[in-house]
Every structure is written in C-alpha cells, then in structure tokens.
Image (cartoon, rainbow, N blue to C red; front, side):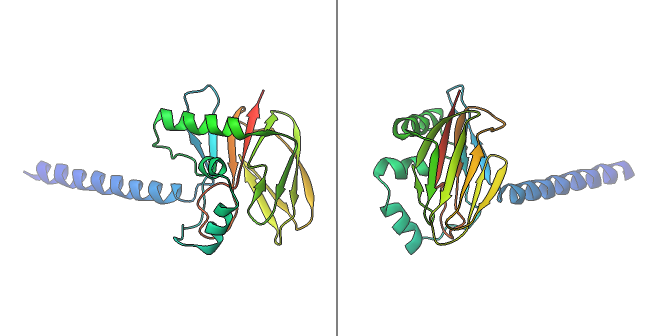
Length: 185
C-alpha cells in the first residue's frame, strides 16, 4: 500500500502544478498589447488590445465613440480571438472598405484620422500628434513616443507582413483600437 500513497501524492502534485501553470498563463495574457486574430484570408489580422480595465459609462469613451461613423466604430471594436471565421472576415472586409490610402496619421486625443490607413509594406508614414498630451504609438513590436505638436516618420516593417494592425491609446476605459493600419504588398 505504500506505492498507492506515492501514486496519490504524485497525482495531487501534478494537479496542483497544472492549476498553478493555468493561473500564471491566464494572468500573463491579460496584459497583451497585440493579439493576432484568425482570418480566412491569407493576410494576418492584428488588432490592439486595451491594457486598461473597461469602465462602463465612461464619459471619455462615449465622447470618442460619438465622433465616429457607424462603420468606423464597428471596425475599431474588433472581434475577439474566439470569433467565427465569418465574423473575422467581415471585420477585415469592412476595414478594407473604409481604408484610406495615405501616408499620414493624425492623432488628436485618442482620435485617429484616418481610422483605417492603407499602405504598402516597406513604405514610410508620418504620425502627427495634434492632441493635448504626449502619445505612445504602439503597433506590432514597435513603440514610439510622440510629444504634443510633433510628428514622426515610421517605416512599415511589420514582422508578420501583410495584414490589419491596430493601435490604441492609454485612455482609461477605452477597450478598443483607435486606428488600424491595413498593410498590403
């Protein structure tokens, strides 16, 4: 019977290790800045995830959303990683429909113009901060601080290539991207 105690103890240890690992992985993924979403196209779809806790009835969020068209609002609230292939494809198609081919993004206090910028891989865009506070532009693996009233050049060299990339804003309660970059070949 001593071997049954050893087996029972081993099972308990394995279960506790599994629970601990699950807890650590779950909490580690809660602070992810970028999430790759599945898509039925050959292009990866990437969207920003907020790192702040959403706040219901936030005055800032509702005023930011009021400044958007229905299509812009829909495209900025990207489907999650558990969304169906159809929902993910519909999101990508909407982004492609409203995308503006340009080389400039203007940020004004968590509002981006255009909402979806369309550009080619390897091109250089200009990001201007016309808001009232410094802006941290984070997309793919890059992070660039843009002071108020300044502009920076940014080369589109995303490691996953073509796709839809989101970027956010550190506004409390804002649980969506503020803009998307549609990268083509």
